[in-house]
Image 1 (tube, rainbow, N blue to C red):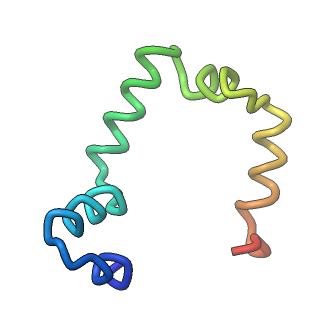
Image 2 (image 1 turned 30 degrees about the vertical axis):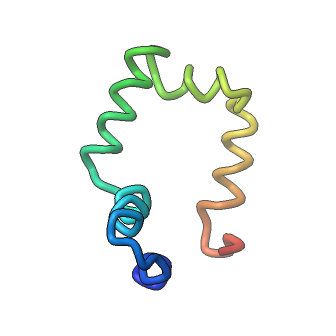
Length: 70
């Protein structure tokens, strides 16, 4: 992250980029709370995006294992 931020000479721009790149628990909780408020659950939200149970299972199998491509 510091390598990205160091490319900005403007302190305000660097601060803005830092705010977007940092994952804060309170940000995540706010997002989850809003999703639950608007959609009822995370599963219903994912369904609304077209991510069916089968698609989610496929993605979990691809990315949540020791051979994930990253």
